Every structure is written in structure tokens, then in C-alpha cells.
Image (tube, rainbow, N blue to C red):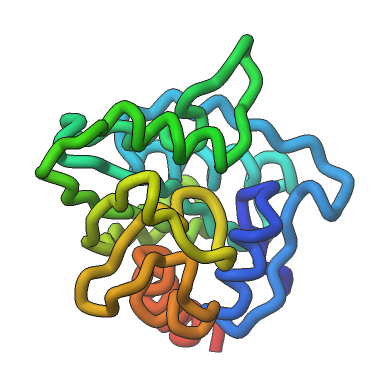
Length: 199
């Protein structure tokens, strides 16, 4: 049985495949056009929208995993939140992660309160009436522009500082990141469910 992941982001696929220790199929690699309208106001809602959209696309016969994740900054009232991937769009087009990072740090400015968290809602969907949903977080702080570090990971990882480790998320190995990240923690719950339900 195939397990599908409702994303076109190959970075996310690589991370989650490692966390689950399973091969995952994603739409872009299977020639499928997948562009769900993420109209939810919460991570949970958007994760379900993605999962249900993909399951309909593939005919509803195989399980689908979807996640919706983002960065919530306390000093910015939780922004960019569910709009993290679309933060700073120009003329309807996404900008690069590097530009997003600089824009976000510019918006935060010299604020002394720099606490933030990554949030990940992850759903394992068998049908619209049978699904499992978990939400996890990773707490940290945002660095200043002069302290952007690391070339691992993706997205906001180079600006997300983990005080207990003294490193940004982008400075961690994939194994380290998957142990403590929001997606890693949510994925471990999903992995346990898969093992029990598909055995």
C-alpha cells in the first residue's frame, strides 16, 4: 500500500520519510497537479484541507498524510502563523526563503521579546470520517540579522535559535532536527499510528 504525503515540497518529503522510515509518494513526483486552496484559519484546518484534497485526487483508496506548519512570533501577535509559506508574497508570487527571513527580522526590528515557536499540525487520513490529527511545537527565539547561521534545513531554520543547544535549527544535522522539531515530534505520533493500524 502506498502512503501519500500532501505536499510538493521535496525538503518536507525527505524529512518526513526519514522520521517515518517509510517511502512516501508526493503529487509533484507522480505527475499530479496539487495546489489546494488553504482557506483554513488554523494549522489543523489547513492540514485537513490538504489531506482531503489529495485523497480525492488519488481516488480515495490509500492513506494520506498532510501537515500544515509555520512560525508563530509572540511579538508579532503570532504572525506569520498559517501564512508562513506565503509571507511577503510579491505580485501573487512567493519570494525566496532568504528574503522572507530578512523581511521577518526587519519587521521584528530590535524587539527584546524574540520568543517564537514552530507549530506543526499533522493528519493521517484514511477517509473523511476516519483520520488522526496531532499538533506539536518547537519553542525557541529569533536571532538578529547579524546572527543568521546554518545551511541545513529550509525556510525559517537559519533564524530560529534554540537556546538549550546554542545553535539555530539550520545548524543541526537532519537527525538532530528530526529528534526535536515540531514536525519530528508530530511525525513520531503518526509513525506509531501507522505501525499499529497497518500491521
